[in-house]
Structures are given as structure tokens and as C-alpha cells.
Length: 302
Figure 1 (spheres, rainbow, N blue to C red):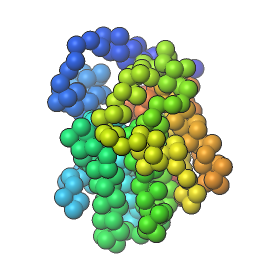
Figure 2 (spheres, rainbow, N blue to C red; figure 1 turned 30 degrees about the vertical axis):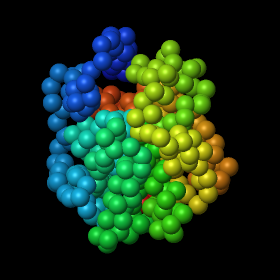
Figure 3 (tube, rainbow, N blue to C red; figure 1 turned 60 degrees about the horizontal axis):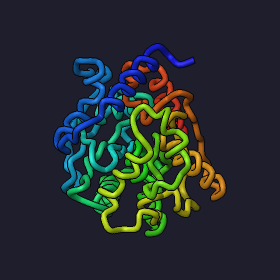
């Protein structure tokens, strides 16, 4: 049975989906996304006690080091935020990353890669490759790095793994994917079959957003739609997704393809949960439990 908090948040999200009307400027959308959870609870959400946040320049890319008090200094989560490649920043995901870091007992590097439509593919992909190489140059061992990303950030994690493998760059220990957006061509069935129960997106809406990032490229190519990628040689994957999202099949088919490629994969489908429900983990029990799952995976593989 869903928690009372889940029922309340779903109602809030459905109300917001129903109220969508006149277009809002991209700047206002970005500001609203940065304050997503705060808008719901009505006040700033404090980071977990003892969390240390430090700004860092990653070869020209803004980033935060985020660490719990007991962080293992040798292990790193490279976190790539979501937001449909249009939204998301160091502010929007600081709380989520802090809570994942606490669950895993390690520090995280949260990256602010370039966004569309100002910067189309492959700008974001280039940025995450730069960040991974920067970590290696800092002396971080690849077997102590775990990638993590939600939605578009999950997409980027999978694109990065393809590039690392194909360029013979040492692979990380694993990757954690929260509701990854893996089909930017919009062909999966859940775009329609889950449309009515998704409290955030319509299938048509999320498919339309893809064009801002894809630009003139073929949306089905594996670096843009990793649901079409060759996954052979990938490290272990952990996938967490809600049952009530139009991106459900993006995760289900990815897991199926991973198993076919003999890639260890742990798939958890959370009943009656929505897209990246973990963003509400400060008040949502299911979000907290999901982060604990991912934390255990990260401790095990990294």
C-alpha cells in the first residue's frame, strides 16, 4: 500500500499536470524546477545533517562535491542530473545527491553540464566525458567510480559507458539509473499505455521535448537513445523506476537488453510511483527506501 505522503504528492502533481496552460518561459521553468520540492512543502528543504558541499571547477564545467560526514574519500559517485536536457542544475539535485551520498557512504560529484536548446547533442555528452576523464586525472581509480543519473542523466550515464568502452577508457564499477530516459525517438508502448496514470508527463509531451536536445541528429542513434545501444561490456546496472510513468518501458526494455548482453542488472519497479519520485525522498518513505536500495548497490560494486 502506498504511503499517505505518496497519495498527497500524487494529488499535488496531478493538479499541476491538469493546470498546465499558457506557455512559461524557459527561465521560469528552470527556476521552478530548481525549487521543485520546496514548492510542494512550502519552505527550503534542509540537507541531511553534516552534509558538506563544495564548489569545484571540472575543466570549465561547474560542479559540486557533496559528501556526508562519513564519506569514503576514495570512492566517488559521478551524478548526472535529469530535466529533459532542458532543466536541472546544481541546485535542483543537491538534496537528492546528498541523500544518495549518505545512503552509499561516499562523496558525489554533481555536474552541471550544458543544457539544450542552447547546446544540443553532443554538448552534454562531451561534458560528462570531460568530467570522467577529470576524475581519473585526479587519481580516482575507475573501479571506485559509480555513475548515477535520473531521467536524462540516466541517458547520459549510458552514453558515457558506450564512449568509454569504445575508446578503451577504463570503465567505472557500475551505474545507478533512476527512471532513465532511454528512448528519445518515443517508440516504446508505455508512452501511451501509462499516459493516464502518469502524474507528471504525457507521452506526447515528453516525446516533444526530445527535439530540443536532438537537434538535426537521428533520435534513434545509440548515443541519443541508448535503448538501441550495444550494452556488451557494461558494468553492473541498477535501475529504479515507477510503475506509473510514461518512461516505464525505457527501463524495462533496457533491463531486458542488459540481460541479453550478459550485463548484471537489478531492476526495481515501484508500484504507484511516478517519474524520479526519489526527488521527494526528504518527505517520501518510498523515496527513502529506493535510495537505500541504490546505496547498498553502490557499496557493493564500488
